[in-house]
Length: 367
Image (cartoon, rainbow, N blue to C red):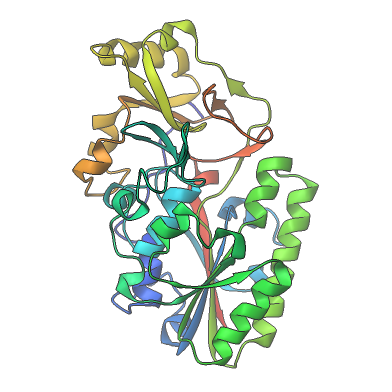
């Protein structure tokens, strides 16, 4: 793809992850893309398989027979197509422009906040940047459903931001994930949110090859095991926060023509925000389009806001976290930020508006 291809924008008005919780927990919506039997069920488990894109699943139906047999299809995630933004949009039912968690690394008053680790270059930022201040929107419609997630995440800043008020049920392994969900359903919980991130981690570290297929197969067995143990009449709805693109070593260093105009960067490798030096925004836009126009969609912040990629509403706080120029990869590449420290080289990545990243499953069944 190149500039002649069109980005796949989030479908905020219809088939988007933002409508899952309002439909399944709050009952305020009845989307026709959620199976009718799921909407009618007295109990529902919403399983979020981090990183499972629809296109990747469609190419591997033989690896995931349980998922392949469920009803439903694809919906869009949000922009950027990344964990912090999308998981918060699922829990709040709002696009990123409203909840303000606009990606993996966002600009704040004293630098760049890593929203998953909730730290800046100065370390733990939970007291300097209170999660409730960065993300003020109510989660789960102010209800307090049980959330099944890793025990290690219980006190993280990101958990405080995107799962505020929920009752956390922690697990330490795949068996614990299933056991917790089954226990909660067995005592009559009407809605359970369950999160598993193995597919995303595997894609990041090993790409979309054999290891990815193995993890997908294990997740499919996990859903089958879960479905076999849940009380009769329980609905299981499976979705994801984003898909994946195999990038490998195709990481592009920003040329001097761009870096000399920069005050800094934020965002992620495939949805990079460039922050201009004072007075250099127009020149930076020209330089970025010249450098990246063949492999990326290059837009101003105003263009990103006006096209609605972040949602129909962008709050003043959210607008202040954007850079001047957005560079969204349209090819299988990423853009380097030397200030971004990773524990290993990420082979699989996401964040941009290609179909591989934007389309996620919305699959349901009643056991």
